[in-house]
Length: 193
Image (tube, rainbow, N blue to C red; front, side, top):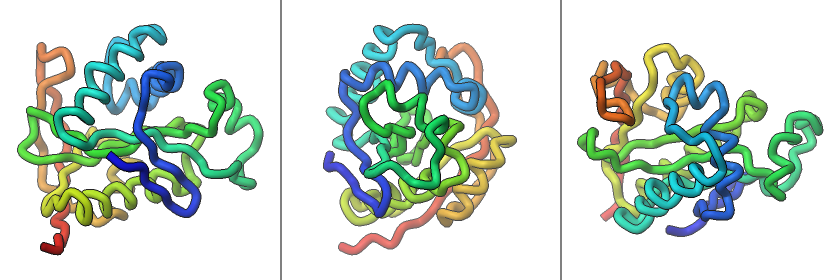
């Protein structure tokens, strides 16, 4: 899985050295509300999650979720907006990538960013690069996405990216004890043969 680059962002593979970042991101209020509690209560838990979920996807699928970093400090951001990221020694702002869930019939686009990074277009820029990677590099002709029905920001972003609402879908929760009602989106990609 190669790194991706946009005008302002670098998308790179996640490693075990990113455990502190993953711990912080997965405990953001937005992550917990819209993605769900992955029971990551320590940096050690984050390391286990990286190994068992993220690195396992790279190995099994040849793709997965990238860590999204700012190439340079964006002059439109205040120091307080970057303070949570400075502990990581980089300008890591979120994750974006492709997920192959056993509960979906197709590969889906997933993304999560620190709330402090909202409103700068980073999620759109990263997701656009991932959609293009899916189309041109791994030749996916149909890409899915899922969202909580009330996650207005994600739904708006998916619409901007060209996804269409397919309808509601019930998927098992991460612990498998129940299901949750989500909104399913799809986009057909023109793949060159």
